[in-house]
Image 1 (cartoon, helix red, strand yellow):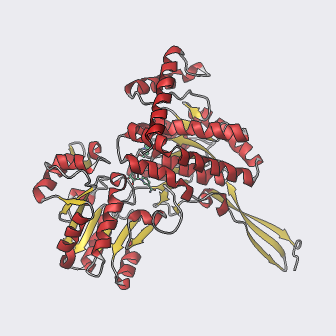
Image 2 (image 1 turned 180 degrees about the vertical axis):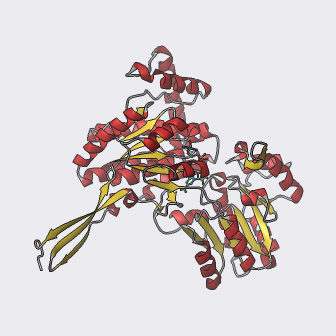
Image 3 (image 1 turned 90 degrees about the horizontal axis):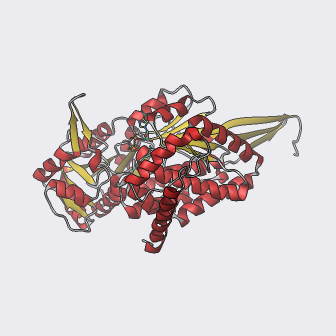
Length: 495
Ligand code: NAD
């Protein structure tokens, strides 16, 4: 990690916090925005690393109406620029994310206190894999009757909701895709990751304003609340919703009265059969499940391994950086990792353990693990809470099954119909085909780690919004366009 960069950020933050105490309104434009700035001030005091973001400038708004008005004007300005200019904005955003990956990754890590700093940084560096204007190819057909052009037009203003698990990466990838296709944005970030998102929005807008004269291409609501999310869902000035998050927000977006693209939850199962390369399976499971402490929605969450190779696979897991918990230790960990809600009588994931390091989970399990341990694993039965819940922790339960058909059945059941991601390690193409067809997930990864499904160590492009219940899949600039046809009848046929 680049310590000098991190120190620069800390120094900058301290400078800003110092200047805020001497200037009472911190760049506030309108008196009615004062409560929002007051909220930011209180948050900043509670978290000394936080950065003051004055309301009303460079895309920062407390009020959804004002943000929509500013984003609408910005989108109209964007439409007056050339496609080359849009391309330049997208490249600017990618470059800024890469140049600031260490500082911004640290900012997000400090604010959310979940995941791993090295992976927070990596998630920003790889934003260059997110596609831009090159995806907007016009289709043309010519014939006896003239020329038919199919083009991809923007929606206008898009309302986005982003998760705590990847706040700046999701926001930035959405910006790249959506601006490439000519849209502007109103963002409602997760409240626990809103300051880092607002900071980046301001930096992006500052750079875009300096070069292209548009100040509010990306707007963000601070502080974000369920009410502001609701205002975005219902605002007439917003043409499209794009929601990345868990079951509650996915349901809310699907119930909205306007079109919603929903990147919802997952619970990715892994099947390992007797033909698999066990070394590769173990290395891949550790690489995928330990990434950002298993915060990725595509990350390996539970493994179904056939009896004949089960014990051998477990010993390979140890060699690959995993640590095996025994039944007693798993029991202790489960008691703290899930809480029973007396109101609904159901177990829920304890957010205090989501995205924490393997060593923290190990301590809860009553064991000290070597510092290099990335992932905890252990044998459980199918009904175990760690199998059934999308737990987002670096502990992966392994279920022993009699054969691959049983593994496929249970894997599909444990995915709960999200149709998000499934993974298999097998050299038997009939088995791979059977599981792929039956699982019918948006991402299906064969003989690799889950991130390879998003272009990391695999082929293809990246997005942090994988639209599952609404079916758009790994989102691209085309996802955020309206199809338009231009038919030039009887003219322009040159052959
Ligand atoms: P979360 O559902 O708690 O929050 C996501 C966002 O929705 C936040 O901004 C939150 O403030 C907002 N929100 C929550 N309930 C809402 C409601 N009723 N109305 C309006 N807004 C609401 O999820 P999280 O913990 O931030 O992120 C993890 C979840 O997101 C996991 O379930 C993960 O699988 C999913 N996720 C999916 C993808 C994908 O591409 N499919 C990507 C990242 C994360």
